[in-house]
Image 1 (cartoon, rainbow, N blue to C red):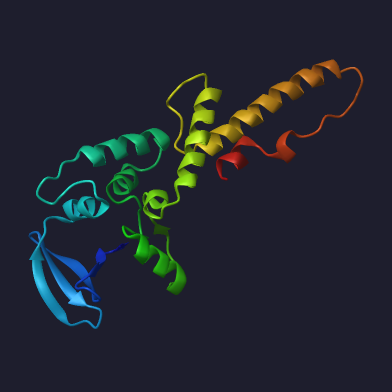
Image 2 (image 1 turned 90 degrees about the vertical axis):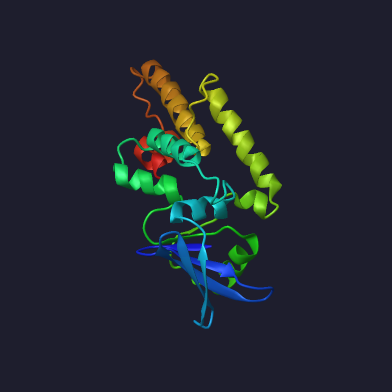
Length: 206
């Protein structure tokens, strides 16, 4: 795992049952320390961006490209085009911005949930597959296909597919209520509020 903040601190395994931390010192060099704080080896692993991609399993320090970062930047730009460019760039590079922890290992993640107060965002990319929760991926795929079908086969659906489904349901009910209002216009019959009074603004924040 890596703790993001003013500096990046990696939690690593330094031996069979030993753990330590690793920090970047410049020129591709990283200093390793044990949990007790004792100095360890200095390793030449590459720049922080390269090491992060390697930890994510996307590349290796010696064979790193900007392909993954560019693809992520495109997706983030499409989902949040009005966000500051610096923030979008940070999200593309590290999956999080500000103080957060990005986890790479299932064992470390489960232990952190058990022993840590989780007082900062804790992000575990590809958690479903790494934790063996295949059913969650099946559900996500079903929701994604449902969202696409609701948009007449268009593929430019937000990754938050469930929100897309809610919005489509909201708009559909509004259209039905509009027709009912026209029929009841001269009767004075009140109509109920759609989706319990939820508005698109409220839905977008859920």
